[in-house]
Structure formats: C-alpha cells, structure tokens
Image (cartoon, rainbow, N blue to C red; front, side):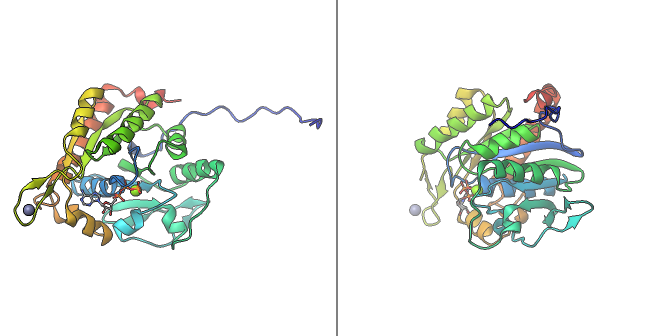
Length: 283
Ligand SMILES: Nc1ncnc2c1ncn2[C@@H]1O[C@H](COP(=O)(O)OP(=O)(O)OP(=O)(O)O)[C@@H](O)[C@H]1O
Ligand SMILES: [Mg+2]
Ligand SMILES: [Zn+2]
C-alpha cells in the first residue's frame, strides 16, 4: 500500500476506434437465448454476400460459439505478419469465432477482463480487409460482450431478434433499452419463429403467438424487419452447415430471410446517411 509508484502519463483515453476498411458494423442481439440470433446472423451475412456485398461475420458468443457449425467451417486461423489473425472463409464470408481457437465441447471459463481482451483482438487484430458489412452475433443477454463491443468499435446499429412470445418480447425490450443506453442505433426488430405452416393441412399455426415484435417495434418507434417463419428447413440447414439462403432468393425457405437482409441493407444506408455523427458519438 505504501509502495511508491512513479507517476507516468497513462495511455490516452481512447473511445471506440473504427475498423479501417469496414463500412458498417451490425450487432445481432436479443435479451433471450435460443430465439435465433445465430441463425439470423449467419443467414443475413450469407444473404448480404449473395446480394453482392463483402461481408464478415464475427461470432461474439464466446460461451456457445455456434457459427462454425452453422457455416460448416472449422480450422485454426493463420497468423499473418506480426500477430495479425487471418479469418477463415465460408461461402464468401470472412469468419472468426472462439470455436476455431477452442474446438470441441470443453468450455473456456471466461473472466470479465479476458472477455474484453478477446473482443478487442477479434476486432482489432483480425485482418478483416475491405468489408461492406461486419455482422456480429452476440451471446444472449445484455452483458459484458455487448459492452466490450461498443467500447471497442463504433457500431452502425443493432438488430434485435425476438420470437412473438411474451417471454421473449420481455427480454427483447431489455435488449432495445440496452442498445439505447449505449447510444447504438437500432437497425430494427425482427420476429423469428413467427408461425408454422402445417405440412398436412397447410394452416398457419402461431406456435409462439404472432405479431408481438411488430407491435414492439411500433411502440419503440423503430423499424420492423419482418417475420421469419418457423421452418424445419432453416433448422436442418443450420445444423448441416449450409445456411438456407444458399438456396437463393426464390426458394420458399429463403424468401423471408432475403427480404430481411434487404431491409437491413436499406436501414443501414438510412442510418449512415442520416446520422453519420452517431458513428463517432458513442463513448
Ligand atoms: N426460423 C427458424 N425455423 C426453424 N428453426 C429455427 C429458426 N430459427 C432458429 N431455429 C433453430 O432454433 C435453434 C436456436 O437457434 P439459434 O442457435 O440461432 O438461437 P440463438 O438465439 O443464437 O441461441 P443462443 O442464445 O443460444 O445463442 C437452432 O436449432 C436453430 O436451427
Ligand atoms: Mg447464438
Ligand atoms: Zn395441420
């Protein structure tokens, strides 16, 4: 306690720093787990790539990195130059995930400061190159990772995913409030697992209810990005490492996901046109 510590000028206080070459950074979050953040992140990223953009996907779910499985990609990222990390590639995307560094089923037990470090490295040390969009798949909840992300880079905006159930919507409201507190623009709210078309009688069944996310979007005066139905093909293709949007925009299973991607495209353009200063405001 009495040790003499020479006073040194500390490092300059640094706010979030843009990633050179990366035009838009979009986080995908939700309050609740299991609502389809990763499924929508992966399909959004691949759809944007199919629409002609250069896209990166950062799996920021350090607790349960599912992106490698959903993209069918694995391997050890190469180091390039002086401790720079080369992302892996899948379906034209540049991808990075803790899952590449720690494959298998043993978890890494993260301490808070380590989480912040890994996020900084994933953002700052990875050779993302020129990207139109970097999509960031967040873990569930409103915690450390989202905070580290906004402290490290200026987010263009956040997408909030919810199912229509009241339980999911309750948590999604928290996610919206969190992004607002962090001064992150909301790209919009998307309703996943909206309804299910019975393959037998073709009736639409509202398994988790329906329409709640759109009402919530109205309530918060943010954009609604669409309804994605509960579709076994979406689950199968995710488990199989071949996102369903690879089927193309005309596939019945992929149509709504492309419509979602196009809405994201439009909203991001809008955010960047109307509030470029929001990119540097975040502290
Ligand atoms: N629209 C959909 N139709 C069918 N299955 C879906 C749909 N969206 C997601 N799923 C399935 O639901 C499960 C959970 O989805 P996912 O892992 O994307 O959720 P998550 O929000 O990322 O979960 P976590 O909070 O654990 O990260 C997965 O098996 C996925 O394939
Ligand atoms: Mg996930
Ligand atoms: Zn039926």
